[in-house]
Image (tube, rainbow, N blue to C red; front, side):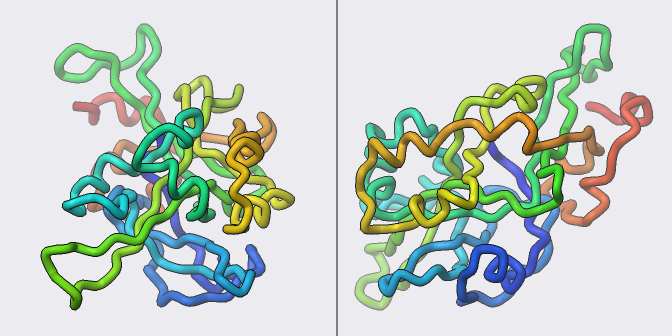
Length: 246
């Protein structure tokens, strides 16, 4: 799964990178984006242009009675997009790209490594990012939802989820899942709302090439969502953390 990521690029930089227009105020740098935070997303508009917009992280289906369902919809497994009620409609019509400057994953400590106070293998956080330092173009789905209890004056809430797939060889050492990272040649194909060939779209949802990513262990400070600073992605001295784990 993907439960935390880094968003350090400005919306202007994101727009330039994807050849899009910017339609959102800056959300600010956040090196520890968590579910329910607002995030950037790139979508195709009705006139075939690309646009950077803001989304609530955690997809809320149009039919949902309450927004809290989004807390369980931060990820969508690529293998079942066409089957799940929450995703099959938006998979066909409402796709987006979620730009990330890297993401975090937690690996369980190896045998003989440090233990938690409960005697279980400690989980170590890793920061995963592109070798070339460029943003990740992560496949996403989006939805628009309105709280029916607010009546006609209620505002539409736009939300999104991260599409995941099986891990590549780089990621397997840490986790068995990873976000779907789209190559540039596939961006417009994925974003085109007129493209509703779900069989063809499903073929895009594959693990990234093994050589695309690199990773390093980081401080357990990232475990606390209140920590958002750049220091979270700094390489960590594992031995220094062994007495800090709980």
